[in-house]
Amino acid sequence: MFAIATLMALVQQVSGTPYISGGDSPAGTDCSGLASWVSNMATGRPVYGDRFNTGNQERALLARGFKYGSQPGAW
Image 1 (cartoon, rainbow, N blue to C red):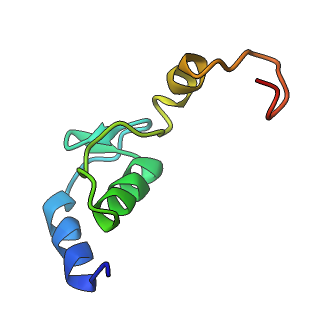
Image 2 (tube, helix red, strand yellow):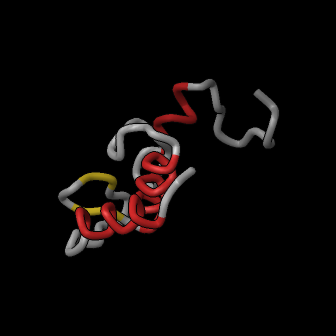
Image 3 (cartoon, rainbow, N blue to C red):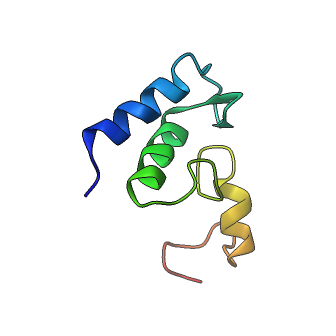
């Protein structure tokens, strides 16, 4: 089970990290990057890893076959 102590350790580790739109690294992050860090830590994955965030969502979707102008689920 994900413990509050684990979350607090992450908070202390990243405290003072600058806000950078699309960021997802110790150099800076945005809200989705921070949410990813918490999710990764809670599931035992590396805090900084490959995931969707504001800055990489377009590239990740295109790599998965997304076409501009298509409807959701129309892969």
